[in-house]
Amino acid sequence: MIKQLLQKVFRRRASANTHTQLPAAQIIQAGKHKINQKHISQAALKTCDQLQKAGFQAYIVGGAVRDLLLDHPPKDFDVATNATPEQVHKVFRRSRIIGRRFRLVHVLWGHETIEVSTFRGHHLSEGDAETNDSGRIIRDNVFGSIEEDAVRRDFTANALYYDPKRQEVLDFHNGVADIRAKTLRIIGDPIKRYQEDPVRMLRAVRLSAKLGLKLERDTETPIRKLADLLEDVPPSRLFDEMLKLFLSGHAIESINALRAQQLHHGLLPLLDVILEQPMGEKFVMLALKNTDERISSGKSSNPSFLFATLLWHEVLLAWQENQKRGEHMIPALHEAMNEVIDKQAEKMAIHNRYTTTMKEIWAMQPRFEQRSGKRPYALLTHPRYRAGYDFLLLRCASGELPQELGDWWTRFADAGTEERTAMLLPESGPKKRRRKPRKKKPAGGDLA
Image (cartoon, rainbow, N blue to C red; front, side):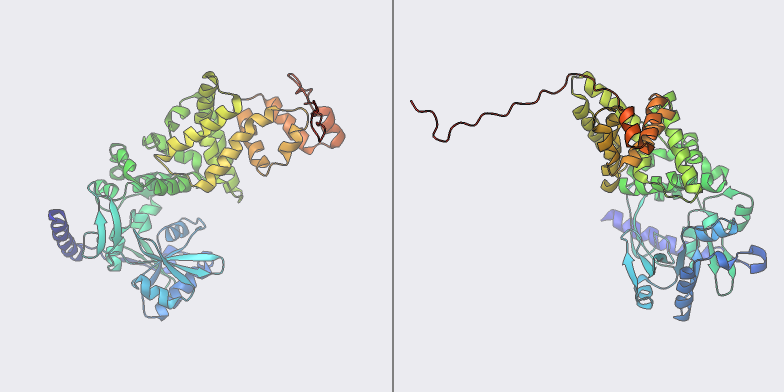
């Protein structure tokens, strides 16, 4: 009861303060910002246009504006408006309200989805908001003005609002100047902002690596001290942020930045230990390099494959320990896989649709060493063969397995029938004895 009364007092004070201390926007005309509207999604333009025709304010916001100014093609386009989620939903027939922590509207245009958010007010103002004891925002559906919304944005480079109709950029926190200076700066007091949402520390690392922006000193300084706050973040949300980080196309830079800020500890079980082992580090870096190259060339990258590589040396270690205790090879591997997945789920919950494929990739690895009889032919027909084969090649390239094994499978997959037969190795070990069929007893049984 006392806590609720204190929160109400703080909300009134915060509401009063936000109205007296909000910066005015710099209005940057088209001739200065030079954003090319041809690079903007038609769905985003139509979303803004229809909201404005309905009498609301509407702007393309955040990362899309930042990327347009940096001449990077934006992947996603978000829109911010003074319309409430219910009002947005009424404007667009094909839309749905989502979220609990933040209520948003997804507006559907064919295969493209535009995320529309209502301008946020201060989370301590009157409204549907809640924080926990550490200061992390649990629920935040407090609506406000565009000026309040700009204060709520995480970094100055993301507090930019583009009006497609007027072709103007509204800049409340000198974000354009920071972008031109290649600087990533958090808005407000860094410690408070990281306490409100610890994931901002990961976002700072990811964006600085992805965009080549240097973290401003006050933005960077508290990160190492506050790294433990990430333990309070829901595992599913942490997984989503890590997925963005590793699939940004700049995974190598991202993991180096994670290490520099000491944020890698505990995100994946003992990933810091793996990276300190010569073979483990080489394997992980090869996997990340492979992922970066695929993304930069416009190809897709499977999260299952990526996380299978990141956790492989944990599985390998547990597998070896299980075999030392006398377990047979295959049951020992399956037990190791479950151990590692369960252990890592305590920190960062990988979705089941990914863990299933990860286990299939791992389970195939012993089968690649069986190159006799019908086994290689059966493995070629496995639905995850290609992923397992690519995984095998990484193991060979890192020195974990002889390169000859990877080369053999490369030739075997492309060979004709006669060549494949010639490539098979002789059977090793004792042959299985065929059971003799039992003789059937006479229908009447034995007669005494």
